[in-house]
Amino acid sequence: MGFTDPFFIVLSFLTGLLICAMSGILTVLTILLSPNDSKADFIITMSLIAFGFGGATMRATFEAVQACLVEIITSLL
Image 1 (cartoon, rainbow, N blue to C red):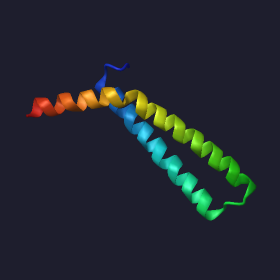
Image 2: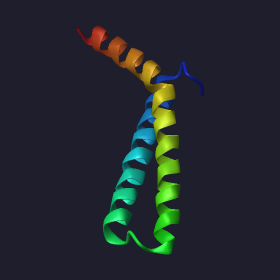
Image 3: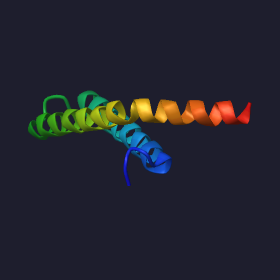
Image 4: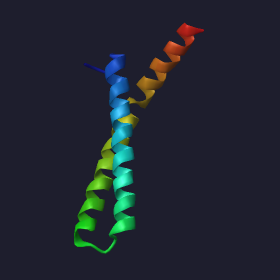
């Protein structure tokens, strides 16, 4: 597995997207439902860290995914 394998790259990008979506939803729901709870601060901190990891994964794989998609689209046309 490496950055030359299109399946690995696309799955890594989608995993980063899923992590960002889930941690963002968890952050928003925690802020809306229990903003003054002592556990809420920990949950928000961990959610924002997870959001950063997901964003970093997406950023690291974006150019390779974009090149892969352009290659697929040009081969179909």
